[in-house]
Image 1 (cartoon, rainbow, N blue to C red):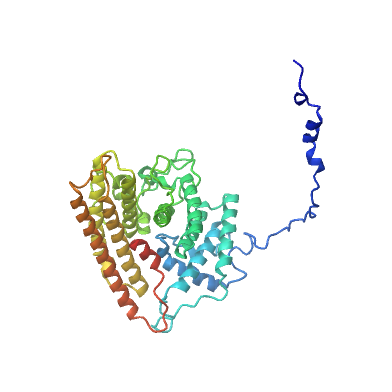
Image 2: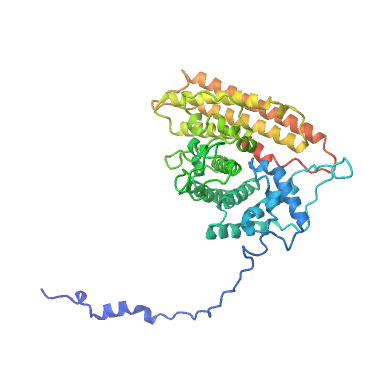
Length: 462
């Protein structure tokens, strides 16, 4: 059969189609501009603000950060942080991204909290805190953090500092209502945390740094092969554990605020085995290694027995968040076995008991050192109580595949338990508001509002 005109490759139509672009009259492009050799801001420009802030001003802001960073869920910071900033070897200092993030947090404290400074050298009266005029603006600090974090990754330099700086920035975004930026920043660093295996600092890894343990030779350590390697000492181990739980806190809070899927979703990849956080002193002294190992796995193990030691505040908050997260999951996807729901209910009861024990201890019943600490204790007590009660409310709604309640015989019993928990929530909020009102009444007329804790309290109330 003869080939048609359309079958040939030499037809006028084919030639025209192949060369159609030659007939298009493109507008003239602007001349190529050479790129500047240095951008307006470089991650290497005055990284520690030594040319902008005096040594005294930088020390003042960092000391403020160390005093108040627990409000950003940072329960452990390096003990020699101030001294390290003056180390002649820049590589032994905190990475610039972490330094800038600490300045950002300290700046936040000066604008959102009625700070009660320590008595000065000559009088017993506290002097009001004044932020140094040389402190960079919020926008400049954020630009510095972002550029310096990128530089940290590019150089594979002090990656633990990169993680901490990113978490502080994400937390700052959330507390200032910039939720989308906070969600993005948190999601990115959380994935990196998983790559660094900070979510799986289990008993075996901790044991390598226990007192009296002979350090494994290079290549024989469980930590080998991880991005961060083995911690150089027990304080760094404590910081790594604290950093992971800080990221866990943000991940769950952002999920509750936005409804976005969490990073830590209890899949095999994200299975969490990192021990619940303890205090720095417990790690440095070795006490933390003598206590029973406890993590999320053991929290939900119905066969486990409660550890015979008092939870730290950080542990209590993480347990409360984990319980609420599990209850929310069970409402959407009921477990296959009723024992899992019964275990959830038992652990909510244990949480209530642990909360009562913690806040009845001398550390929380003695008069706080200042109003700021008193406000933090009040809101922490409220938040942990509300998270546990909210988990209890959701637990009353868990149903089996056939529509029957997994914890109750009928709907009336489920509703009664739900209403009782809601009334308990109202009581917790009322007590906290009364305490906050009493604190506000004693403030001097020129004092700023008690606003720094509003995010924590709103999270708990939500």
